Image (cartoon, rainbow, N blue to C red):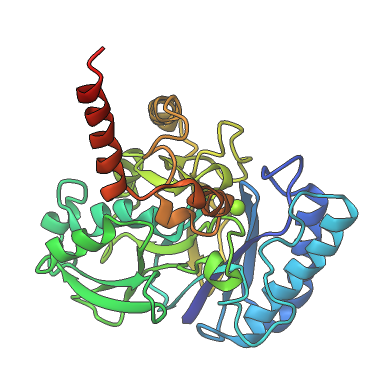
Length: 386
Ligand SMILES: [Mg+2]
């Protein structure tokens, strides 16, 4: 069966700050999607990571279906109405446009979609980031799909041995978003050269090379500030990643995420902290909104989803979290000094730009005047040594 997995997520308001949605808002989003299930969907699942609600849907309408995107948009709109009546913080904050215009991309919510011919045992993960930018998954995906040190399946399985094709988005080019396609392992150094800059480049999709019609991963790469023209919160990417058989195994992603790479995001979307793997439905951390990712494992048959396995919930992860928390605490000790705070290029929509503009007239150019003043002082000293 040909099935599309669509994950659409948005922050439409949270309790007491940027923490988590209310049960009532989640319930309204769920009811709204449930109402359309018979008409549009095969199945769906709803959860949250931090303040973002994720609608995970299976259907047969393909990627970029206006009906599916509108369903998510409408559900978020209804949820926003409730969030406003509850006084939730940032109610409707990711719905950046007034009206739906055929596709959710460019309107604020993040989306990731994979269309696939279902395998007999179709296994996939949904990754949900909060308080981080679209490049937050760059390192774990690179390690799992291109580095045999982390992904021994690249050596041990003939299905993986040909490697994978990386589609990488340049999110910060003057002429608009642009994409490059690079194949691993031949272009490994070029892939690494791009993915190291998580503020500018993000993995958008990964494809099998041995089976070129099989998409391995899709990641939401929308930059909210590009839509709004100002800082409006972080981008909080969702991703769909197929696993097992012709793809890396679920457990090969674990050590890659346990690295806890430093990524942009956190408080005011203006800092670097390590990406913390957390169980699903975790509230954002009051420790400076440390970036987080949850991973839901699903099996699917005829588009029907099992209940998810909560992939960062088993006991092993508590030790990983302790270590990543230590990284975060250590970084925060240096406060606003780079790299704890993002570089100025990433703060261009923040209040610091206004502050620097106000400081500007107080600067004096150090040209001949400075030298002259120094000489004059020397001259005065020479004239009057006492
Ligand atoms: Mg969020």
